[in-house]
Amino acid sequence: MSVPSSVTSIVLVHAHALFREGLRHHISAHPEFRIAGEASNGQQAIQLVDYTDPDLVLMEIDLPGVNGLEVSRAIKRTHPHVGILLFSAAMDGHQVVKAIRAGVASYLPRNIEWVDLLAILNDVRKGDYPINDLVLSFPEVASQVLAAFRQMVVDEDTQSIFSPLSPRELEVLELVAAGRTNKEIALLLDISNQTVKNHVSSILRKLAVNDRTQAVVYAMRRGWIKVVLPGD
Image (cartoon, rainbow, N blue to C red; front, side, top):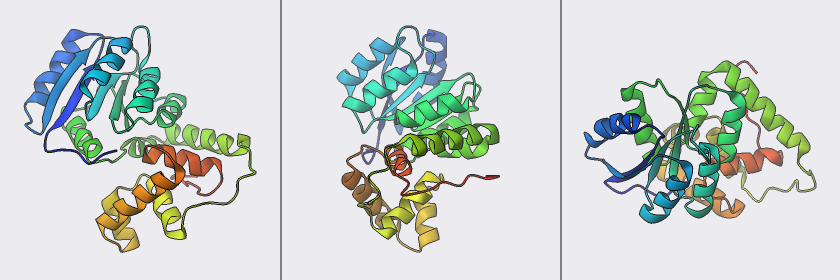
């Protein structure tokens, strides 16, 4: 994800105008955010993102027509730098796995408190992926996600064992996969925050992927890294 500018543009996507109005009211109260546009369905969302090229998309997963996951995949293919946050009624592990594989940065319960949403918006605008924190916060979701990733490793053709990443880059990527922020990784490895960012950029370039989540999935499929979640 690209480094955010001083003002972060957001596209709101929800079928209900009242819900979008509430989001717009709260978000517009903060000068670091700007509403770039609104859409009520998936097809509109894709077209609006093409037109406005926002920094973030805040979207309901259950949209009429094209659902939020399909929209996310379409957006990440053409606008890989866009951070996507999905609202959902249920914290379902299988849906979270699909969201991770689609490159979604955060998967949110619909009843999230505004103060928590604001914190997550700020995390995503800085390039973090709070979806990892969600996985670690819900044990039942964590176990489903970990099981799915393990099955992906089993199913993957294991011919490619060689990793193009350096030992330090693998260390960084394992910590990314464990939900650590850049700041936390820097403290754990006793390196600067900028060095962490440089390592992440190098990882994305070497693996030819668009974001950190895709890098984690790519490396896990090939058995280069492992993620151990609490209670595992």
